[in-house]
Length: 188
Image (cartoon, rainbow, N blue to C red):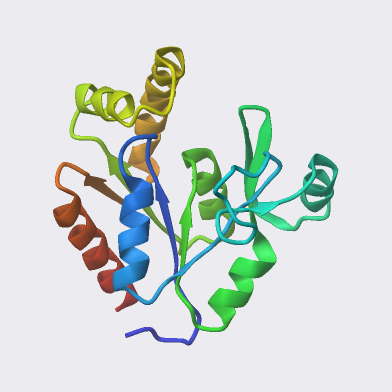
């Protein structure tokens, strides 16, 4: 088991459409782990809740948090800021809770530079064709947006070599079990 009472930080990333959100949801149902909620400057979606999906803040407030060193990591995506509040994560870790972040590779690599024992897990699609198929089938975005996501995923996948673990989400249940195995191994 753990040699001290501090929790462990797990970071999950992967291209849009790989199922990382679903894997995170399953993980928090099956394992005692705290899912860190990110801050964002984007507008709240119709079915979203403050403190559940995100903490919604103004651009000025987010930029103040950056200046004051309050962000563990942050990135800009589609003109909005997204980032992780350092204090919330540190408080959970200090309380002995394991913490899960679901963030982009840019942010994950920032986290690894600050918390060197963070465990980085990258979710890969079985193939680029399957990734494209999943993005099209979920029907949320225009084909132009999907093509931009596919292009971005190529850079993201190149970053996977900087991660501690890579898992392929070909079968959701097997992938979730593999991630649970990683969490349990790292807790030892």
